Image (cartoon, rainbow, N blue to C red; front, side):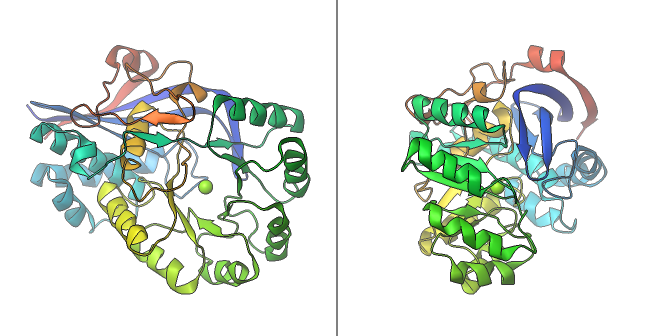
Length: 361
Ligand SMILES: [Mg+2]
């Protein structure tokens, strides 16, 4: 009996995560479970608030149950699903939740790991840390602990007014560490302020301007010696092509949910490889399910910068998978079992969440 369940799981974050668009206290995730001969899983990277994009858990659930389930009744092939789902405009995160589950299913049916199915070669990936906005003393302490833990790169969330002084302080305390910043679009209308960040010798400045302001991004990239990295602006391989053509950024942060799933992600991976665009993988505070997809994607050789993928215990007291992701000297091992290679802890999932949708296919 083929069946889809959507669990709503709420995991408190060990430390609230503040960015230029708000503070998050817990990860309120939608977990997709397909059950039949094989069980397969996906995660919607949406959350309660449409702060990062226009999607949230309510819109994702609506799109899944009112539209995507109908497509699942027609096909369980990930590529066919993507084609058929094109009639639904946007809603990439909702689509990705289902599409990624189908990739897990596809590799389980073939009896291979998802890593092998997508041509991943790395056995472990480099881990960077993304640190939210914190009081200065706490920030310095967190950076110190992150360096001690072996993280390969430190990323700080910034916003106008929380930037120059912070970077000066971090450089003064820690010298020439691999350092980046992420503005989550907060400098829109304040282009000159971005230019002031150039002197800090950052690896990149991530998404300084609004996601749809490619012209503005191109204008400041031409004045900056620091590369701009695009995150929110990249919804498809087409956007990556626009970035390259306009020189609106020189590095890409890829997020599976933002681009609608693994198929589009792999097209971006190939495009970056072919055009020598540095590439890394971002994060959306995913539970172990979504995290598994991020880790596996990064086993592709085209990922040549440390991503934002931290071990589970950076965020949660207990993850919803039986063997949480751990980090050793800044590296996370890529799961090699069938499919995504992680086993959900269903008992724990039922304890911290509930089924909010269930339907036979
Ligand atoms: Mg970002």
